[in-house]
Length: 481
Image (tube, rainbow, N blue to C red; front, side, top):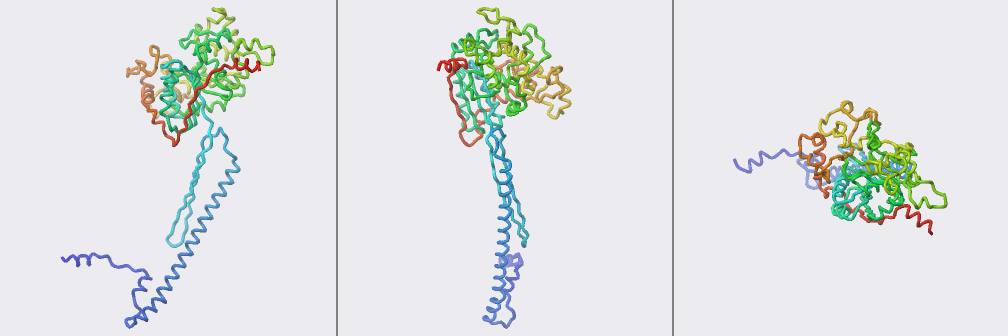
């Protein structure tokens, strides 16, 4: 078949609008060119003008209604924001997205207008304090910091009391975080060994039997080492990781009684006479109101004892230590019957001053010291809270009794024989109960790359090093002026 015939046969029938038909169809076979022109001018072009006028009218109506809706939205939203007031510093980030859809009904016409406004309020940082005195401790602290940055929905502020090796180790890893999702602030404190010994000597009675030694006792002096501008902190031992948003733990401060200054895990069901029952608390994870601890002068000093003004309260700790352990009778007038290092002293403080203490939810202290970690762990993903609660152990006669544990912090203490818990031999044993429960979590966080934390658009990381002057020394300087 001829291609031209094929094309002619396959051509779609012509479809003309009324205007097309008016312009292309003459009124009669006898019409002259002039008559046809007048006809087209009268009917075709006139219809064209009417169509243009109609289109312009519809467009004007559309534009008017669109502007009216947008103006109304802007006014209403502005009034609502004014009534709500400016966002507080402690408010969580707020993102407001408004979509305005306006539909018109001129002939076959629908239009949608979108107006999106994003407002992010300032957010209070979650403030952490860590102790890392060696490269081994720094390697654990690095994993803890990484886990915090993975999950934190707020800015993170770290105060790290450490030696030079630990700071060097941590700085190398933090340097990889160039664009964190939220602002990241890190301040290192390097007290000399002599300065720590001198502060303990000025206190006069504390001593340590724990492997953490002198640096471990610095947990009793956090409120003195950190500047007064830092009013509350979360302390976490380095052998722990977060598996949920630490902002949830930070919000615990909002729920405390006005008198509370110390929050930590409470295990009143534990009985350990050889430790003076100090295992009834755990100073491994603590929420500390540093401002209150400064006001009550938690720890004593010869500088305070020699102050003749009598304008300041006596230190809180000495009466608590004597009530629990009697007078110090060890070498150089030190306590030699206090166990578990700093925890033994914290135990005396909170037992003697119950109004200062509140228990921490076990959500934030899932500890491997209890071997089966309250019988919770990974797996069985569709279990109900009721069933999970029925399986829990080690909660009877504790503040957690009857409350389901929803793990947010894992504490891998009591894994003896390794300086870094991540390298514990038990992780390679697929039949080990702790490995079954939490091994994959450790593997994931260890393998998570630091550069994966670069989720933001700009550099929001600040790292500084601060000299340490204990609060009692600062007091002496102030008195001398």
